[in-house]
Image (cartoon, rainbow, N blue to C red):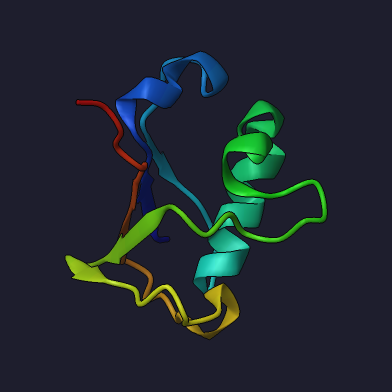
Length: 91
């Protein structure tokens, strides 16, 4: 199963877990499964219309997924490592 790693700042919506092993064949399935397991994380990933928010970066096995690539098109292998990189702000 693919491994999902979320930002540490999400600990309040993931019961402190930053790593999960979830069944999925593509990135969309992985994120949907993650949100079903942690419903409060949904607002961090999806708009009210159910669209993936555009400002996150996703790394699959160390390679950045282009923002223009639909999550359904990003295939995952059983041992894939997917990381969500949250947007950074500050000064």
